[in-house]
Every structure is written in C-alpha cells, then in structure tokens.
Length: 412
Image (cartoon, rainbow, N blue to C red; front, top):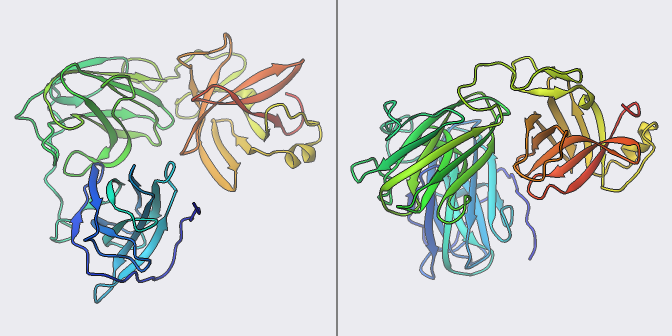
C-alpha cells in the first residue's frame, strides 16, 4: 500500500458520477456511514459519501475516517460556484493502520465538505469523527444551536468536577439525548495548561462512553480532546490526557449506544486532589524551581539544551558538535519554567513539562516528567549509568527507554 501524505492545493475538482447527497456531521460525535455501489464516484472510480460542517477562518479541524472493511481515503474541501468540489486536503493512511486522518487550518469562513471514500473501488461500513467546526443545518452560518444544559451544580445530573473526588449519577430517559437517542450528562472542569488528568467512568447498567473537550455543539462538546469506550476494562471508560490550555473543559457521560442507569465518575490530577489553589504541588527542594504560574515543579538540572540519542549510544558529551551529529531522536530545549521545544523528525513540538508519578514501574527516588508530542507521551527524568548522568526518555505506554539525552556544555 502506498502512503499518501497530506496535500494542500489551491483548487482541484473531483468530478465523475452523480452528485452525492450531503449530510451534516456533528462535531465530537462518531458518525457511521457506508459506501455502496450506488454511491457517486471520484475520478479514479472509487465510491464516496459527502458530509458537511461549518467552519471559521483560522480554526483547526481534525477529521478521522476508520473502517474494518476497506482501506479508507479522505478528502476535505469546499464547493465552488457551480457546485464543483474544491479540494483543500486529502489523506490515505494518516490514521492508525489503513485509516485516514486530515488536520487542516481552515482558510475562510463557510461550509466545508468531507468526502469519505476508499483507496480502491471498495464498499462497506465506516465511521467518521470531526473535531472542531460546527454542524451545518442549512441556515445562516452565524446561527448558534441551542446551548445544552451543563448541569445546575447537582452531581446527579452534571455540574462542576473537582480533582480527587468521585461523583455518582444516574442517567434517565428524560435526560437530553444524542442523535442516536442515548441520554447524556455534562460536567465541567477548570484545568491548567500541562495538568495531567485521569477520568474514569464506571457503570454496571450500561456500556459507558466518556468524552472530553471544549464547550460547544448541540451535545455539549465543540472540539473533542479525547474520547474512550472501554479503556478502564470491561464496559468502563478511562481518559488519560494532558491539558493543552488553562480554562474550562467539558466532560460528557453517556452510554455507547443506549441505556440508562447509575454510574460513577472519578477525577485524578497530577496537581493533587481537591480544588487547585494555584500553589505548587510539591515542597521546594535544593534542585527544584517553581514556574511562574505555579503549574508544577521543574528540576533545575533539566534546564538547557539536550541532544537525544538512541538507547545505548554513547557520545562525547563535552563535544557538543559530536552530540548534535548523533542526535538521532532530536534536540530538546527546556527553559527554567519547564517550557520545552523539541525538534524531532522534522517537526517542532512545543509544550510544558508536567511532573507526574507513574501508576506502575516507578523507580524510587526518581522524579518523572511527561512530554506529549500530540501523538505519544514520554517520561523524562535524570538517570545514572556507569557513573555517568544522562537525561532518559521513556515511552509512557511501555516505560521502556527510547532515548538518552546529553546536555550542551557537558556533565551537569
């Protein structure tokens, strides 16, 4: 299978076959569709469906398409005068395996078109997910859907969440519902940039689904940050996420398909339990500084410029040119506040180091930090081998070493 990368082009018309019936896609929801032999075709004779949403200039949207029946292919564009499709982006395997993913910063206000297709002339079921944008209902672009209820402060039906607390609720048939008829509750959480959050939803009455994102949309969530079905085992859900910004986040509780009944929702934070009061989560020590807004503790010895090499590679760390020549995993800069810039595989990643304690395999006396590169997460900490000290980078999923870091200027 040939990998096709995301393309940004000025105008490409995909024609052939009859016009596809357009349906509105709801941001944050899993949308199910199916390709059949009666669908219109692209210029390479592949079948496609069309879905629409409204977007604003400068907004970033992410569209994912998944199927177990065929190799997916995804297009994103707009309509030109006369109805021709004007392509902005396309993707083949940008998602996992043969699934597709398109991430685009929208060039203008208006209605956008998603073409869900296949790499070849295949048919079968698929799912689409849109993060960002708003559902298009055929009216004025500026029209805002009715704002859903975010709870009245009652834990039984939604409201504010606090770290370190477990809330109990019960979904009723009289609660607001998703398009598939599933009842839902909405909770809000005031988070901090770089905060590591774990939410666990459990129920013995229904197959639990947990969704977290920003406020908006007909069903409470505008842009989805993360969603999960069975991450806590069985039919229970768990979300592990590093928050990208300060501010309010929305958590939605609902059954995967249908059902009502009792549930519990538990919130854990890297900043500790209870309401965050703006103070540092750890006591100051000789080797630690606090960043300006109190979001966490940064080891002074991590501050600086690091060349990251593959595990087992040893370089002369007193010769920085030798380090950079062998920095196969990239160059990582960390400032005194814990903000980092990681030049990795041709990408520049920016974020905030987050102090974190692993649930398992934590080494006594080791202070861990987390980096999220938008795809994976990594532990960063200081290690000692054979009398020499290094930064060590572990994959969070496996806790295996993926890189050693050598700091500019030699040993710390």
